[in-house]
Amino acid sequence: MHKKLFIPGPTEVRQDILDAQTEKMIGHRSKAFTELYTGIIKKLQELLATNNFITVLTASGTAFMEGAIRNCVNKDVLCCVNGAFSDRWFKIAQKCDRNPEVITLDWGKAIKPEMVEAKLQEKKYEAVTLVQNETSTGVRNPIEEIAEVLKKYPDVLFLVDTVSSLMGDKIEIGKLGIDVCFASSQKAFALPPGLAVCVVSDKALEKAKTVKGRGLYCDFVGLKDYFDKKGQTPSTPAISLMYAMDKQLEKIKAEGMEKRYERHVAMAKYVQDWGKKYFSMFSEPGYESITVSCMNNTRGVSIADLNSELGKRGFAISNGYGKLKEKAFRIAHMGDLTVDEIKELIDNINEILGI
Ligand SMILES: Cc1ncc(COP(=O)(O)O)c(C=O)c1O
Image (cartoon, rainbow, N blue to C red; front, top):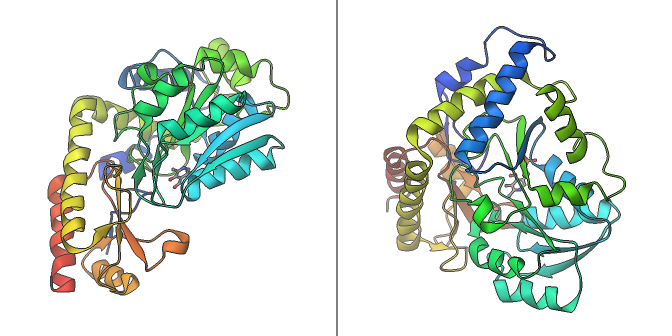
């Protein structure tokens, strides 16, 4: 039996989108592919309300965590760390031989604008990394307020991981002045894993031209040159996934970005009202994610057993991430899920736990 996915990626993919992957294969240097790919980029620009350069690579989101560093930082970068993925980004910067400094908070806490401002006043950084939605803890960092701080430092690039929020949460790329933001297909896009989307500002592209050792696969300058000349990607893309993405973007457009956002807010509210009533939220009050909720396991139930019981009924949720295993659990409400499906899941959890 298929278990409907309420986990923070891969998310549930609707059958018509899965079916779109079975289109006949085409060559990646054909006119047909150029039409498919340039169409996807146009749709993304429209949905995200930006004219910034957008690239879609056959990769997972981590590729662009590394790409953002390699393209935008020679040496000094400030990494905001308050969970597993923001910590990964910091480690990537170290592995790329950059010189990252950190703001480190306990898991569950949110990065505040004044913390960023204090660091930016101390030293000249080339960029700041922020994971807007920490999937490991269910924290939504206050990107709108942090963006206001970054605007006072126009030489500092704003690199934002929206892996588990783009296409669910509201991310106003232009208004917030985000220089690089990226996401993985298997999250709020509600697509299978395998594609990563990256949106790059002109400022970031100009900076990239001055950075050595950008590598090849995620080189923003090379990707843009190739796209401008050929309307394609330099290396062979996952064409089947591109068919699925093309169709999914049409469906997202039909739903409307505002409506999609409102649906995510409604799902988050339902889960979090329930989470506060029967458990407690792991995330700092006021900073709850709108795509994934992380609850403390205050009732001391076996999350593994709960999930296996749910599995028999056709649902899957997530245990706590890493060190939070069994101490917390997560319910994702992202992608194409509906409030009714969330209610059905919660009813089943209540029945299993007898609450
Ligand atoms: C916030 C965040 N950043 C980065 C990643 C890494 O993305 P990927 O697994 O697509 O490489 C994830 C994956 O869950 C994530 O949630």
